Length: 399
Image (cartoon, rainbow, N blue to C red; front, side, top):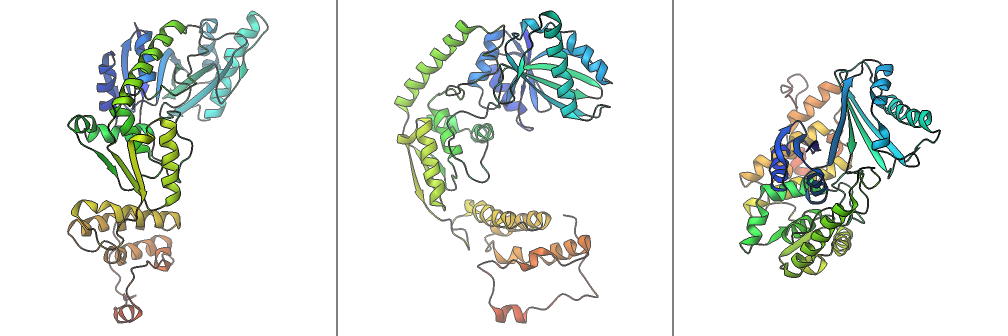
């Protein structure tokens, strides 16, 4: 029985705790951006293979005080690294520091690497190499308040990289975040009841592909060809092959019985082609339909569509490198007007309070005033609009 720690994005700890408990983890309790749990090596392997929410699976090796670099070096050398790493293998170190005297994460990683390779050099003269991309063993050191926790990363690379994504858009949605959205929406229950999944702004198809793999009972890590424990000295190859065979059988059965109930569209035809290629790589291309379709630009057709114009026009502002605070304020105002049924584009965009706030902060003219949307009023309407007085400016809001 060993202690493990599964990392995840903040806000997903409770979902990850329930998921790990379903995978056989014992004493699972949430922490900040992660979950502590207990279990044998098989439980850790199952978490790497089946967890849809975790980012990494860590095995804590030691915990010690590290107020100086010499103390850090001594604490790392106190571990017998021959039990974890071969002399001819490769390693990499990820370091994170906060509220500590040692503030340079790259220097901390270098000292940890020096302590490991110096131990091998002292014992036999052969030292491990360094590979930052796909090392045989990846170490994770977290230094907080001069207290260091050194762990072995069994994932090797972030678990949200499923292995099926070939192409992506400008701002892709991470796979574990998409899985969390689907679990929050109770997509497995909806699919079991005969429901369907529709994504009108599918992008590269992350949400649809994750929903299809979840419905087909396909292990999210089944297509990955690299894990951090494959070069570990304590790796159980027979146990891992047995778990892979089980995942393969469940995937073949689930994909055969998967219903074609996945529909996606996007305004950009290039993203539609990207989504199709990703779906083919994931093995679910024959179970969904995609098309090029542009969302309504002026007024939502139905009440649930208020997020569509917000996401479209807010992304336009972000790509144009406008003021981010004004963009956030405009998006929230746009959401309020759209929920009430008003046209979401121009009334909320002409937010004079946000402009005056930006002018006061920068002591210059706000850059958002130069952006003219396609649904702007005519010149006559703009000419009749009263100008803001310079002597009596509206109060600057907090944004």
